[in-house]
Amino acid sequence: MNESAADERLAARVADEERFDDDLDPSGSVSFRPHMRGVYEAMARRDDIARRVEELLVEVQEWAEEDGSEEAMAVLEALEDVADILGEPPEASDT
Image (cartoon, rainbow, N blue to C red; front, side):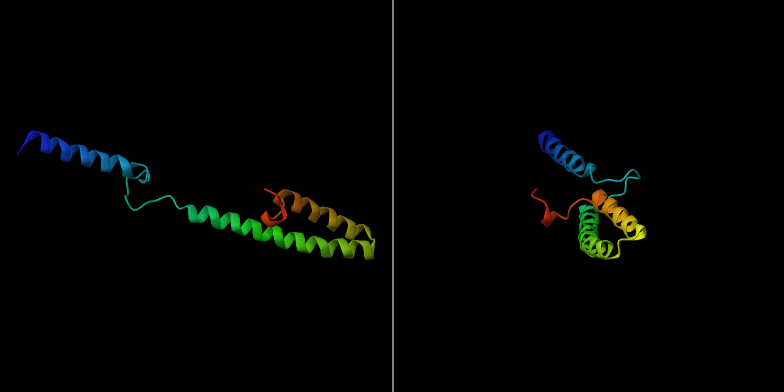
């Protein structure tokens, strides 16, 4: 066997191993791949919750105005805090 051909095959194998090295979990399993799907699903779920909270906020605002009680105002303030934490749904923001 020609030494340069063997060197080329070894270099190709090392390159393949380096390419897949980032895909290995700490135990060395080659079946692990980082899943962006989970990240996007979490973002979509949060966006959906933000939409539903915004819709609920409109109803609670109407109720609090009609009712005028301290309890209604406390619920409104608490829901506004939750809406602030979640932020605006993507379609409501300019970014």
